[in-house]
Length: 206
Image (cartoon, rainbow, N blue to C red; front, side, top):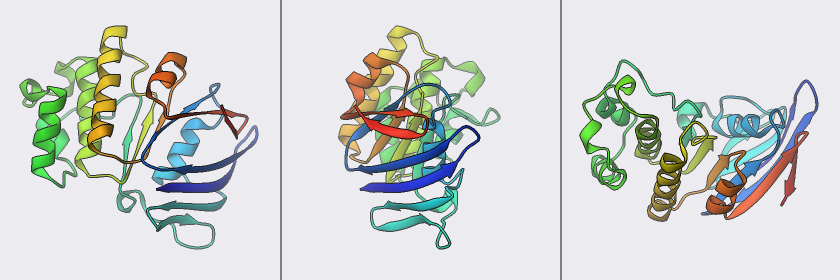
């Protein structure tokens, strides 16, 4: 269970984010600059709220004037829009970075079908393959929650559909809270157990 109630003062408005997420996929939609990525960054520890608290499975991740765990201790997977793979590492080494369970990784690599690119470098593989690698790398750390920031936005329709299906398959295997940001309405309807819209820093249950 992931729960948060935070405030973050931004230039144009104040972000008010209150969520409680179980073993489900929550999709955040809304216009650019509304606070979606800032919400993910606050949960991950890349950014810090001005007030409130964030709790993951009874662990306090953040509380104003109290405990604030660093990124590496939060045990949260994060897949960025540009995938953020290490260009100087092979796919195998990218996946092993932070890996906690070799058997789990072997299973995931087989499930998403990337065995044939393990010795390649990120510059040598397609966008869809990079997406699969990023998902496997994030889950290889055995996260207690997974954050996805527009992970499929740069993919063609066929590859996007394949990666959406892989995400659903991985979520069925690894039942953890997932928060995903997307502007694609069809994608939100396909993947989201719940769809929430953020406008001017306020979450609207849609």
